[in-house]
Length: 503
Ligand code: NAD
Image (cartoon, rainbow, N blue to C red):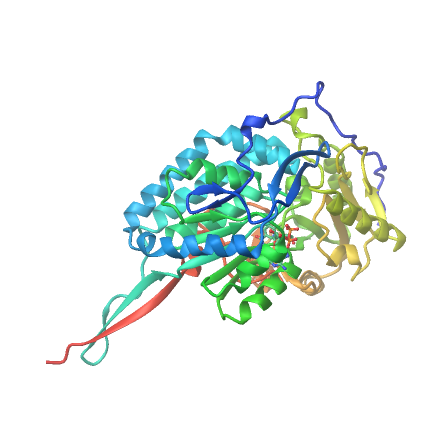
């Protein structure tokens, strides 16, 4: 495959004057949040929180311990019966009040999130909007739950199905959407009548702590608790804790494995939203212009640090050259910059130096393996962990770049010759979170969507989500569903009560 595209990439757009995104007063208390109050940790050790656009340390949070977790779990256990006993209407009203609080503080949350992750303000503002909608949806859904109709299913025995909360849930969240991934857990967990202890990513704790601060007066003490710290020991203690009824993690496959192993001894439920490597299958009858323009967003939203990112194109060989030309045109037009540099910035830095090294390492190895760079291909000038929006072509079947989750602004392009090959190769990855099919043929769109082994399949679209529909994966992407009524189900248990009423 050839393309006339050259290797030019945009530089990093900087704000004209150094304007800090946040002031000291915007920061949440740098402590754990336990039993309705911010508390000191059991040690003096701290973790630096870094702005990835400038590499400056913007806060220091306490490094939590197993002891800190135990204290938070005890508070959540003490709060659970009162919270579980509230009527769905009462919990629903509270969730709406939380949503209102988020709306009132949208601008603050957006700035904090962008300062901590480097993501463009357009992305962080969208995150807050989605967080609000998640609370509103769960507030409504919990009042409309259904179960099997009560009735006699055995002679003279009346069966009633009760939906109960699980109890206390441990939650571990990643750095890519710190506020939104927390809310995807918190909203259904609270709606279903559970209490929780959440550990945000050690890299991005600020909006989770701010959330706790701003809803502290709305929730009874102990219902929501936040413990800061590293995966081990804080996440590991949550996963093994005997008093928790479930551990829910959004994160990498490796963390998912560790959590599931640690949870096994207590046989607590496990809910895992793990990595993705979404194929984008483009047939010759597709609207190529629409597909290329959609990939500009779906491949590079949140700088490609997105588990559903459209990162692996499989395009029919007959239209590959034309499609790559269009895609490269879109990618070269992306505006890369720090969040303060304008509302039109589309791509920010990688979240950390370690992740920047990981992404650029994938690019270096791909180049060594003979993969061709159609645009981008490496780091952009610092300060900040910026990587050029990249399209890799001539990617052979099975190449590392096309199989592993790079989690950066990188799209790989492979070609196929027929439908069966497209399906086989799209499915030939260990992850199964999401995929898309691009075709104007109705038979093909239904058939291919049914044969793709992914939890979400879009047709002529990619990365469009809604609170009403489930999000979650198959295979190595984990199990359990976020969003929708299915999340409420995951955070509830059903109890069958049977009454003998024989006269
Ligand atoms: P990560 O697995 O490194 O960290 C996620 C969380 O797990 C962090 O809070 C971390 O401290 C904690 N953790 C790490 N090791 C642990 C252990 N042994 N026990 C308990 N907790 C542990 O992931 P990340 O780098 O923060 O996030 C990126 C990953 O998250 C990507 O793989 C991405 O695909 C995935 N992700 C998935 C979804 C989804 O909906 N499926 C959404 C967002 C991100």
